[in-house]
Amino acid sequence: MSRSPNLEDAYALSSKQDVKDLYRDWAHSYDTGFNDAQGYQMPRLVAQAFVAAGGVGPVLDVGAGTGLVAEQLIAAGVSVIDGLDLSDDMLAVARTKDVYRGLYAGDITVPLALPIVGYQGVVSAGTFTLGHVGPAAISNLLDVAASGAVFVISVNAAHFQSAGFAAQMDTFGDQIQGLTLSDVRIYDDRADDAHRNDLAHLMVFKKA
Ligand SMILES: C[S@@+](CC[C@H](N)C(=O)[O-])C[C@H]1O[C@@H](n2cnc3c(N)ncnc32)[C@H](O)[C@@H]1O
Image (cartoon, rainbow, N blue to C red; front, side, top):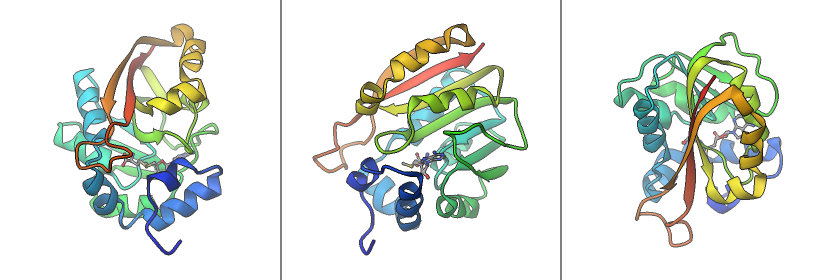
């Protein structure tokens, strides 16, 4: 791709290879050309919700990308953060920031093979969205969390509806506790007209 990717490109992805190719092209401009330019709020909102729910480390940041969530978690006082992402190129940018204890390449749509399990927290911003990851992956995240672990996962509101997140969350029954959903704007007023009012549902719950 000769130009930098944009949100329309990201929402239209349809395979794992598409994801890797897009984020290879986006990794080096993501923080300035996307995060700053669009007023992307999810990393800060996810970190704040995690702390408000009593979340502590060690925490797994799922779809960690360039490390924006870890930067916000650290600013909010959380320590010991591991990151997991499908894109080696995004992880390479995250690595330069020195905000993660460990960084792992992996696909959350299949059972995870991490050297560590029993996380006290699991967070994710911007990964459960159109063209990316559907609700079934949450089961793989529950498997690597300790009992009582705090989960904060942002889900694009349109994707929540079309991919059936509500029905998937119902299947977890008493494996999860205290599920709440709140609506937040994904971007602030810097965003382009097409996305200024895009919403996410912030899902907060604990593993039983
Ligand atoms: C929009 S970025 C969000 C990055 C970061 N969390 C943030 O908020 O800036 C989405 C990230 O999800 C990752 N991703 C997409 N599909 C994935 C999968 N199946 N497993 C793990 N990571 C995935 C992408 O590589 C990308 O880094």
